[in-house]
Image 1 (cartoon, rainbow, N blue to C red):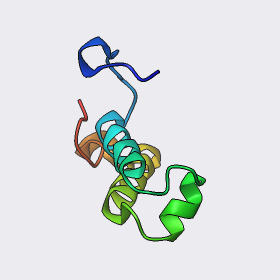
Image 2: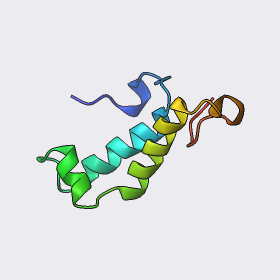
Image 3: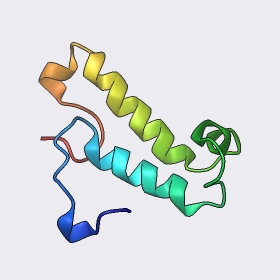
Image 4: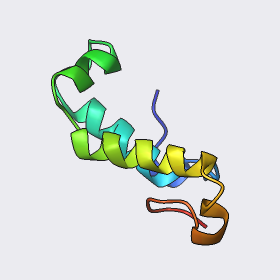
Length: 75
C-alpha cells in the first residue's frame, strides 16, 4: 500500500526529487502493467528520463565537486 505524502519518509539520496517525479510520471501513464523499460521505449516521460540521467551522470563527474550536481532537489 503506498504511503500518503504526509507520512512519507524524507529521501536524502542524490537526485531524489527527480527520481520521485520520474517514478510518478511512469505510474501516471497507461503502461503500469508493463516493465518500466517498455514504457520508456514508447517515449513516455522522456524529459524526466534525460534529467535523471544527467543528475546521475553528474555524480560521477569530478568537476561537479565545484559546480554541484545537476537537477533539482540537490543540497
